[in-house]
Image 1 (cartoon, rainbow, N blue to C red):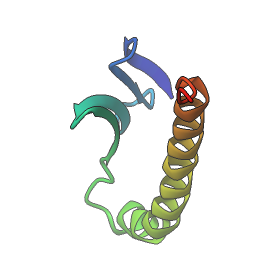
Image 2: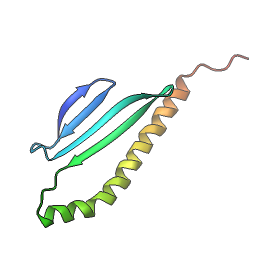
Image 3: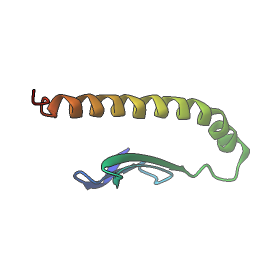
Image 4: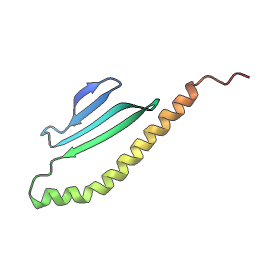
Length: 89
C-alpha cells in the first residue's frame, strides 16, 4: 500500500501498487464533532478464485476494521476529556 492522498486533518488515501485495492480515511465535521469515515474498494475481477477469496475475507476484515475504528474513537474521546478544562467550583 502506498499513500496516494494526504491532506492533514482531512484525508488519508492509500492503494495497492496495481490500484485494485483503495482504502480511504476521511475526517468530516459532524454536529459539533468530527466523524472518521473509512472506505475500502477492492476490484476482485471476474474470475471465481479472487471473487471467492474476497467473499471469505470480507467478514473478517469488517470485524477487524470495526475494532480498529472503535479503538481510535475511544482514544480520541479520552484525549478530548483530558484536554477539557476542569469545572469551576
